[in-house]
Image 1 (tube, rainbow, N blue to C red):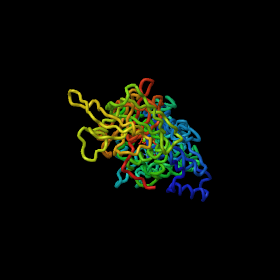
Image 2 (image 1 turned 120 degrees about the vertical axis):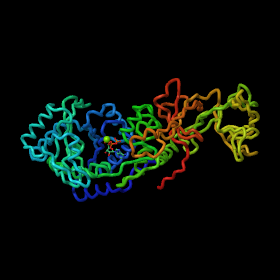
Image 3 (image 1 turned 180 degrees about the horizontal axis):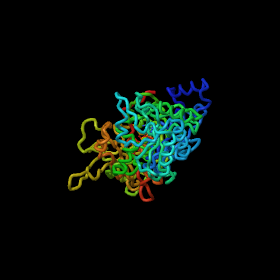
Length: 552
Ligand code: ATP
Ligand code: MG
């Protein structure tokens, strides 16, 4: 069930105040990804927050590609981001590219120069770092800081014309080298980069820096509340400075919130790209990736992801959410939606020696006892079946209620069977079990004789559909350390297990993204990448149970 109204949070309170005081007449937000990778679940938090906040107050949300860095951006990422936002269930009002504002941004930079608020600096990047000072020491003014307006205008124009090499000059805001906030110590606002841009091609060889570009983008679009993550808190005075000094008509307000972190998960496009580029995973949509594309391929639903994003809330302090919480929401969403079927992951053959040789019985069974609208299917039963090897032990401990020599169990939806003989190969591995069944004990027949303690699932050997089944464990073993160098050492070598099993015949025509509950095994999704006419592949989305409880 989807709970559409998010509870109150500090950003909502700011918006309510701003509307009541008349600071803003309507609410316009934006989701501003840089197209330098696929979106991850952290972005989903920002998407849900921005879109639902505007929606609740009858406002609008734009999708804007923050494409001001030509070297890392790509149209493949632009397309994937659009697909992911739509799949999550959100419609943007306007679609924008920051690169479409380059001319206006250039003009605003010229305005700053004319007003004596920006200058061209020739310091090398190393010198700039030296001059910047530290948290405890003020910075030092660059010897180029007092160039005349004319000289600055001339140099900036020549930067644009391509007369200088990368790094040779930058345009800096002229603010305060002694500011206690290092961000305000004459930040660079334009740099030279002779690089082709995915949108503007070779038109530009100077590009605006994020801190200069972002407020302008917001103001140009009339965004009212510019929501970003906590690391930009110190940049807020600069954000406001740019809006004011560039004489922007519209005055957006920057608000910071804590980014989402999840246990055993790396959440940075740069690191995720490394996992892809170095073949730790099979692409951005590998089901082990925390990308929206990866979670979708694994089998997560948009409803589950939205509910998760609402439940984690919006706070001002960083924290880490347990990965099991994400799983809780997909389980909850699929509980009454996914047909419940039988699948055998690690097959072992069972011959029912007293069952007639050529007989096949069709058992009519509902897909879900608590969701009868899902309908019924027919399950064939005959002399040879498969059960999961985990449901048999030759020499079981006490309180083992599944199959073992001499013990009787119920085959779900069918009969009681008793194990009489264990057949092994030369190496002593169990290859086949010989059982007998009791025709009196058919499921639904009202049989009230003796009882058995175990019920196990099975599939009919002749009619079952072979299937590849993929089980996943966390891709990252330990909590992420902040040392970038070591996260690849934490990659789990056993994060994927590929099994060759069987599913009941009702799944013969299952299509990509169909979702099922395999009784006793978990929720599974038909993999869209590897499933084809000859082969069906299932990804385990989650197992059935977890120890994790969500307070509601
Ligand atoms: P990354 O470090 O993963 O590349 P980013 O912040 O650089 O993330 P952007 O493309 O700039 O990625 O992000 C677009 C929007 O998504 C921004 O508003 C950003 O604040 C938000 N966002 C990114 N990561 C998270 C996260 N983990 N939790 C919440 N919001 C996030
Ligand atoms: Mg980034």
